[in-house]
Length: 146
Figure 1 (tube, helix red, strand yellow):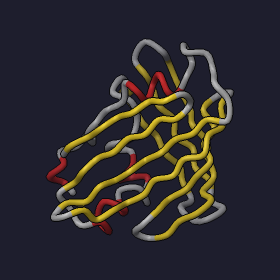
Figure 2: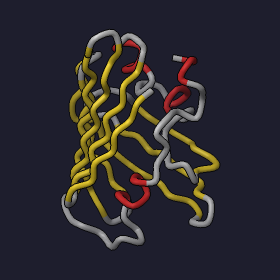
Figure 3: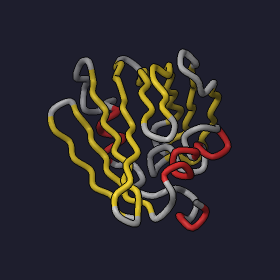
């Protein structure tokens, strides 16, 4: 699995390539059981997720982060087009951001493109961009589980 991370201003862009069918990669975003296996930063020791995966549905993701304590992300799904795109608004403490996750077929593999845009710039210490820039570039579980 190949990953690229780009940070520019208030935008974080993550590109990942998977050797798996697009519908299967998309499905790893649709249930808390699958999402908690790979989501979160690399310092997360625990991940709890409650979600209602539908347009207008909400989610809460609670992470226990080594050396930082508990961090909770709340959000609402704005658009879901299976297996192409998921758009949601996320609240990271004092910051609200719109996230677009797009799933592309590219050659034999799939490319996942995630764009995150902040509405305002938080301090670097509490910045979700700072946490996400140190995030895992692969699922907690082996990519072979896809």
